[in-house]
Length: 356
Image (cartoon, rainbow, N blue to C red; front, side):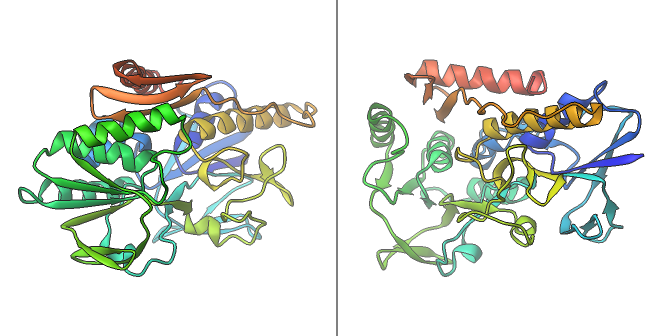
């Protein structure tokens, strides 16, 4: 028996499982999933869990229940490629013949002193739970600082505003314009929403230090009762520690077929992979589909194409609370209730149809 091990049950790992189970796995291949938690988590919705507008259960999706899937729960400490072993914290190592690494990302603090100690996070389920508890236990009229005005920071700030209208919320943006990756009309729409809803967007910010009771913006101290960091991500430390070629963002450089250049049996999916697009759930799913198709061809002895087709992204949707949203679908920019309804529909389909 050959053993295919998927490390990480995120969006990419989940899509691979869906494409191989129940009938696309050869009889001589054993499939193992390793994850810290006993369910898939919808990471794109962690902002709502942190803000207190969604329950823990609402952001979970069960892993497939299949006889041919073995679930192993634990924290990956190290991957030993030489001996083909995955070392788990406090558990026996797991061997593999084929490996798919989908360990996701974690916060990047850019060397800002105190940021790793004195800020909250929404990069994992465990950290988001702690963030949720801290935010929802704040006394009335507390000050919350959100560092980083990308999609996560924008969605968290708007959701928190709807959850707690008593809070004073600051959103720190390094640029001149919020969400510069979107069309100007959309960034203006989001900026106006924040102004109408009393969220203070601080542009051209530079966070130089973080302390327990506040942060420094351009060396000016600004008191805060809670600070949430959404100002950048990096691959999981296990991946950063791998002795493989990486790009300038520490993401693993892969072949056209998504495996390591020196090992065709080790694939990397999702946020840890060096790809032409910025990391996203949609990109991880598209890459997962291609990895599954490559595995099936290899198992059947079929010739692989020299190049795989580009992964097509349908667009990006963001929420501003429960009633308003923004996004781009194809060439169309969307704002208001239509964008929010579309996002709700996409999430409903994912959760109730297991992403298919």
